[in-house]
View (tube, rainbow, N blue to C red):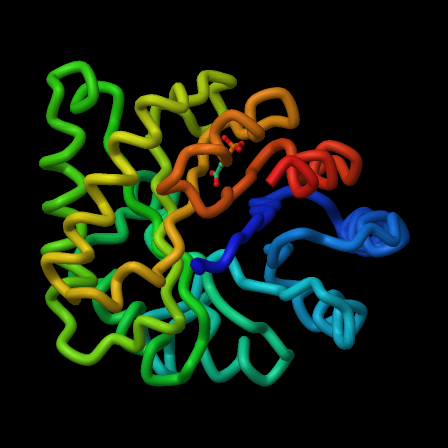
Length: 248
Ligand code: PGA
């Protein structure tokens, strides 16, 4: 059976007190989670939040990592730095990183490779724009995104991999993909994983992200090829996040 996962990507929201408050609210709910739960606070609070989450079921992941190891790269944060503060994994290839910060396939490939070599878990985001969806090219986009990054690496550790399908047109827009659209593309992604990696691909979780809310998560999570979600806006509210977690 595949792992079930719900992850909260806090993006550039919440200062120190608000971040600590949010994680404490989630922990104080005393709920037994029916899935693996991840949160992704901003860089300055990773250390403190990792400490708070130690010995709890919540794992902490970073929203980004440099593709470089160390040196004169002003403003960057390395993988070793993340590991040294107890981070369990990294979100790579988020569409905001690709679009706003120009991360290209070469950079993403390096980041994926570094994470794999260092045994950090990876949430690798892929997804089409509205323009591509309207042209019916979503499957092609996904295939190209995978071929030019992940599939190009020869020894990626698949145990550390979670694929996040995040259609760009659904992120932060309030327009989630329908469960039929999500199932169709997750099935396609699974077929691509199978072609590349064979039977072992059946154990790779594929989660959905894009305007997931408590009122649509149950439907989406019930799709056979959906193994959970990467939640943005709704993860900033403890109750909404907990409701999404319990809908899995
Ligand atoms: P959203 O963000 O839930 O606010 O649409 C999802 C994401 O960017 O991971």
